[in-house]
Image 1: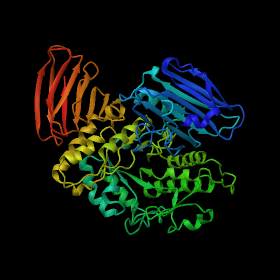
Image 2: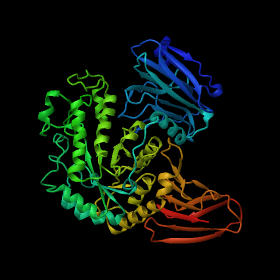
Image 3: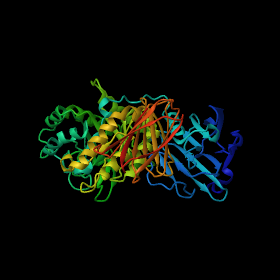
Image 4: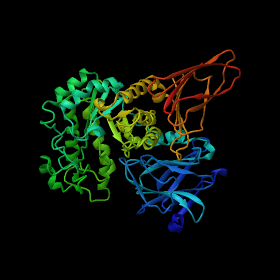
Length: 596
């Protein structure tokens, strides 16, 4: 449909893609110059020969065996949508201008990344039913003096989603430096949000601190509820960002005590939000900031294009660091800035900016500068989906999967999607929540699905029964044992369209494998690693392992256990072949540890 709609406004570009079938088209005012960046990888320079109301680049490829289209920061999308499903706005604080068309084995059939990552662009994509094609349309504004770059990856590159996605993300990020990662960002997290929502105070945190530590957490993220007027749904009290004296008479002292327990502390803040109950509202009401209605919001969004707002928000972030002695900030609701896109720009100050994306970049530059000032170690700064743009790696060292309370599958998918685009940063799971009256497998399911990011727990430690506690302690200790492989190793996974049924991380002389569906054979190369840790995150009692590259005369030492590690079965199998295929009894939501 889209190809027919644009009709004669698009001209083909000499892409010279061989047998891959990829075509590139563009509006007449664009000049595209192609260069090869490797087998199946092409970089296209984009210039405007003359100004157009809107520039368009289209990519098309025959459907063939396409199974899904992946793009970052999206949850619950149709794997292969029709091209009439609508427009998607992409900007610095909302998703990213990149994506991959995949087959069921996650091979990249067509991938793209566009360097116009700060200013807003519009993405349209989907199945063109009239022509049997998958089409991707990029719509954007471009001045004659501008130059952008487009990276195209086709099947000749023989890249999987993870490899292609990371290459595309690095292209978008360019030469921007990543924010350094403190050691505390690589430790399991306790979050107050699902555990208590806004019902938090100093007494709760200090009473639960020892329990957090005993579970294996080494940081606590104090979410919405610490600040004044944080009660009930909605954000009408946001804007002042000072501690509620009834809940935290001395927040700095509370944080100092948490530090004494060995816990780093991160505070939640939504700097763009200001409510009419706040004192700050009287200072900004004349700006007539955009209002978000409804009892779950009931708040205004400050315009980041205004220099006075950027200065105010950066100073607020610095004040929280100084006044309370926190180790970092969880910065939320940045994506709401996009509500100003297309509205008249303010011109009340010489520092005011026209474009929302450029204004957000300037705001984040100011926040980073103030937060770094005088610090020896980098603070923890957490963003969450959907603001996953690779450019943001300069401003946040932690990216969290999007909210999915108690949804283990969505959490696994969110972690994996984020890890693809957040190469070089830490990815946290969404806060894990489970029923404390359920069997221990309930918490094992949550933790195992979050295993390939940094786990965030959000069940009050004092409420966790002993059997569930044993599972938490054992699995978080196992995660720490495997951390170097998980966070720094080579990551591979099964089909994104099937919710990543198998995930592998190889590094530190071990392979860590999460199996999330039944009837899977786990392959491991004994010439590369000497240990396999397998998570049986299914109801099956049997796991099948195929070890390649074994030396004769060696033995496979296998230890299978339940999630808590309380029931163990040890087996030793002599190596009789270079490749051994072994079925092993592993309890549902249990662990298999193999060495050779």
